[in-house]
Length: 227
Image (tube, rainbow, N blue to C red; front, top):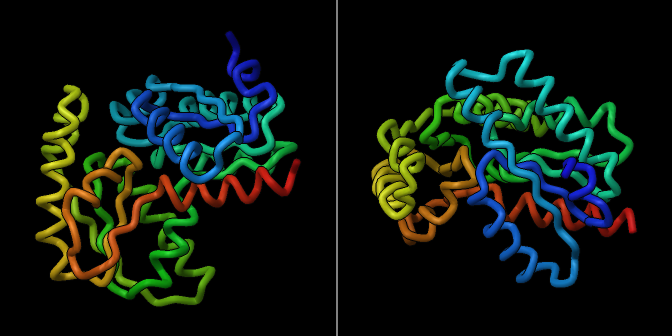
């Protein structure tokens, strides 16, 4: 079934690069916007290709853009890309779509640059960290904020994720966050899949920001404006 048909009648249509995110955003919907219809399309192939290529190539960008535009044409009020690596594509697609298209992590980035000057960009996948860093720099520039961004790479965590060992994946990230907290004013999680690790890490004395809730809340506001 084409992605556009999945989006028919939905308030928010999500493009994911992992099926893991379906449960996350359905839970947010039930808690924060019960009754709001959500639709999900999963394109794991796009992230796999970006990982192999070391970033988003023109071919990957074309395919991702086509997937987002298909969702935009399928009747949704807003399209949300939950993959950090593909986030820049979403903001470029927004210029050509008839409805709002957003990246899930823009609200998080805007909050981060308001929260402190020393920002740790935490991630398990290098392309996602790079796109998140560029996003934060853009948010800081638009806000007129002077911030220092430091990559915090959990290199061995991604293999655990790919193997389906989510508990071990989040445990490794939580341990890394605890170590990184001492040197930063705020920590930003570059991938939506990392969000549970922030809760597992507990109170670190500084904000640890992840994209799902802030991005979902922003998407709901947009969807409600286009009823």
